[in-house]
Image 1 (cartoon, rainbow, N blue to C red):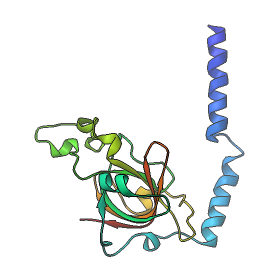
Image 2 (image 1 turned 90 degrees about the horizontal axis):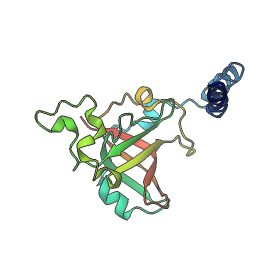
Image 3 (image 1 turned 135 degrees about the vertical axis):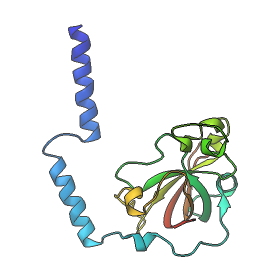
Image 4 (image 1 turned 30 degrees about the vertical axis):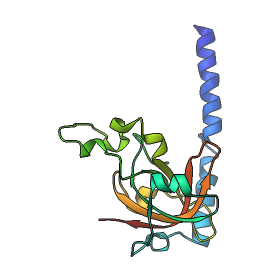
Length: 181
């Protein structure tokens, strides 16, 4: 039992170190993010588009055709997991509109319909990761929900540069987001 507790304490300490939790390191991180935002704050108006970009592709189509560093415009609904957000960052996932969220299925009482749990077989090839960047291409270190007033299952049109990984997953470094009503 003591060995187990020792291992758990060691693991917890390592996890905190990797995650960056702890006392003294928190204050400087906040200070540096404040300093960088004072230099050039990212505002909603810099990223949020007032009109929908033309030529948006659905996520599935974009995953088939997009190549690295190509300018793309794609449309999808925010979701794909129980938590489609990256806390503290302007990063979220979207799903192709052809998939049904649980709330689109009459009588389905799913508590988190944006996880698309009824579409798990199709989901891996129908998602894209959206990373919202500033004019320099740097990831915005502000939660997308707060920065852009976004929520699960909203339909968004994003424009930006495509990046593919070896598994065929698509990430869009978005410099413009339009929220459909």
